[in-house]
Each structure stands twice: as C-alpha cells, then as structure tokens.
Image (cartoon, rainbow, N blue to C red):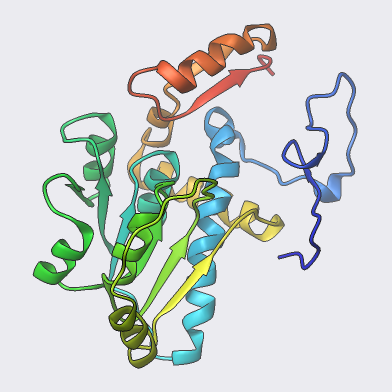
Length: 258
C-alpha cells in the first residue's frame, strides 16, 4: 500500500530475489510455515494475493455494518482463481468460478471438489449468468483479460465488491454502457478495488487458510503443484512448462531436499 511512485520488491522491481548463494535475514521478517505445509509452502505467495483481495473487500464494506456476503464469483480458473475459490469456500460462501476452457479438465474438477460451480464463458457470459441467477456480493477477477472487468461491473449485486488482481499491459479497447454502470454503482453502493502485493498480515492469514484447507480438503493443495522442476540449472524447463505445458497450474523449482 505504498504511496511512492517507485517501489522496491525483491525479485520483482529494483531488488534482487532471495536465491543468492548466501543469504541471511532477520527472524522477525520470516513467516513460519508449519511442517504439515512443507510440501505446499510454495503456494503461499500466490495465496497472499487472494488473502489481501478478499480481506480488503470485507474491510471496505465494514462501512455498511450489515454486509454479509453469500454469493461470490471468481473470474479465471488458473492458480489465483483456484486459490480464490478455495478461500471463499472456506468462508462458507457459495462460489461460481468462470473459465474459458470447457469442462471436464483438471481445474474444473478441482473447483467442483470444493463444492463450487464451474461455468464456461463460451457457454454463457458472466452478465448473462448473473441476470439469470442473481448478482454476486463479491467478484474476484483473476483473468488478465481487461474487457471482462466491465462484464463483472454489471454482474455485482447491490453493495457488491469487485476485486481486480490482474495486471494488464496491452491496449485493448471496448464499448461499455457507461451510464448504466455508473448509475448502478452510485445507487447500489458498489465498489471496485485493485489489489497487488501483500504484507506480513496476508502471509500469516494465508498459512491459516492453507492449514484449514488441508484439514477440510486433504491433498487438494498438492494437486495444484503440477510441474515441479528439479534444480536451478534446469531453468529452461521451467519456462517451457509455463508456455507450452498441458494442464499447467503451478510450475516451480525444487531447489533442495531440505
């Protein structure tokens, strides 16, 4: 939540990552991952993206005092979308997750195992689904496809919150019903908020939800780890899996056995 025009983030912007030959950090900056989460700890960073977005939605709508979200939509069925579906289901919320790929496939199976609903956007659009089934109290967008944001804005229920987590660098342009969207947001107490990066609070809450997920859904998190690559010297394989692998959810490098 920096106000600086130039920000510093290890491995992302203007700071080297943590895979130095020798590295020491103060214990106060380390978030402990329980032994039972050792095999899925690599998912904690993407989990924090979801934690921050969902927490901010609740924090914003505290202003209404009586806000009790019951229905949520997740846009995108990739890694972030899957984790967002998990977190919202752990809160007892009814979740519909939208993706482009027709089911059945691994991601849709994982979503339905959480008790959520998977919908293919080639069959029905997000606004069409909302019109037929009712708007959503929370929409978590994780697609990387900016036009769907305006579909989501039209699919919120009154007092709804739209959380945007995609970072888009293109120049797409579309036409939107701007008057209607504006009116609905003003009269419906609706909110749209962007989220990026996370602090210690969200790493800690992420550990709690990952622990809850293991208790509630067994090895569900492990099944997201689809493409392990052994050793940093095989970095080419990491990129090949990211760009051309099949059923890719999480590509990661196993640095050591420790």
